[in-house]
Length: 467
Image (cartoon, rainbow, N blue to C red):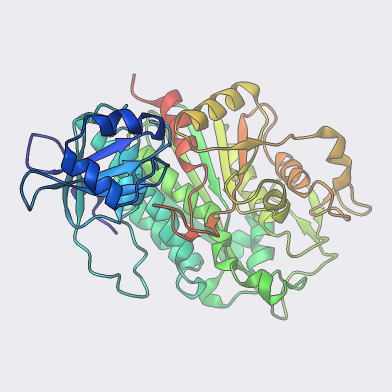
């Protein structure tokens, strides 16, 4: 894991290169104040004043130089200087006080840190020295480092190949997290899983013994504090089951545990910040494999909730395992339930990769969640829990189906299915997230990605932070 704490340091006046971050509309005025050597350098670098232009600016001595970046990102954007985080020589830097930010780092510290993170499990990254950013906002350093580490945790877990990230490895991640914070871990597997969580068992029963299904639970915090449940879909690989995916559809299915990765990272943030909650983390961990005992289209599944589900599509398995986990979460009467899941292709068709489709059953929770998402620039997009589509889940032989025919409103009907396992009156938000970035951007490489993580953490911190 990248040592993020070493990359963001208090500014105590130590020697550092200067970074000038200038908005395009302010460029001409800025340039007019610069000495001739700087004006000559920007002409040579073909700086036109457009966003993205950059140049190395000479100082008074040969070894003295600074950096110019033209940027139209908002001051509160985490990505404002991200393009420099991995593009500068190793060394120590600070922002100049001649821009609109007046030298403050603010949210941009996160992008600076993440730009230097590399997923290095399978190959050695190019040896590049650390680029350290100095900040006068000393009180914000620890929090920025924690959020960067949580984001990197999601990315690394999702990027790991499925052969190295099965249910047992997710359990090991939970064990490590719990040990670091004095939490307790409970794992249900085997006969106890088949009896107590029949949908989790049914989805995972075809996997090899070393990849057997399980429900992983972590509990932490003062039982007297408000109880919150965080649930993450942990399908470590999704073949589609007997309704098998085409090879192209399976290509990225190592990321189908992206919900679990988000849940683990959010739980870590909650515990590190010591929020005033009783945390209950639940990860149903399975591999949706194919063998002689795989669950079948047309099977009627029992559930922990006591209702029955006609399985109309073995590739709609994520909602099945989440149903049992949500039931378990609800039995402890939590004040709030959040779930993360790489659940539907329909959400990606509607909103693309950057916007998690978000469903909320409580208006106060929706208001707080979307305000938090805006505040930290971690966008979410609300879709409706449209009651008119609830009858699409009707079955001729069971209490419901898991996947309606026709494909209409797929993200909504999946959320409506999950809603049936959430206790009435319990505030609940469901984030249908892609957990993958198909095209790289500064500090956001192609691969596993955390979407909605910072928004959810800001919500919890706002509601349950130390008073």
